[in-house]
Length: 110
Image (cartoon, one colour):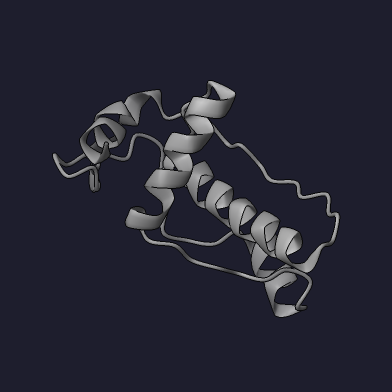
């Protein structure tokens, strides 16, 4: 179980099954792709992902999980780049889960 602080940050984690909730690590396959320069890593803060998450929720009807909100922000940045360059692109991302348990964070953001 992972808790959430009043500010919407990760709180204490109560592990029920070993490293199931080890959210601070990177998957070996992703690390290999990054090392091989087949993917690019980007990072966004919560102040940048919340607007993306809210827009996605309003347009798609799905409240994204925080992890997915980071991907949504990256997709929006890439789509804007393509638009400015006049290029048509297909952009795929993984919507890893819903954010129904994190509704308080989004509500406090708005």
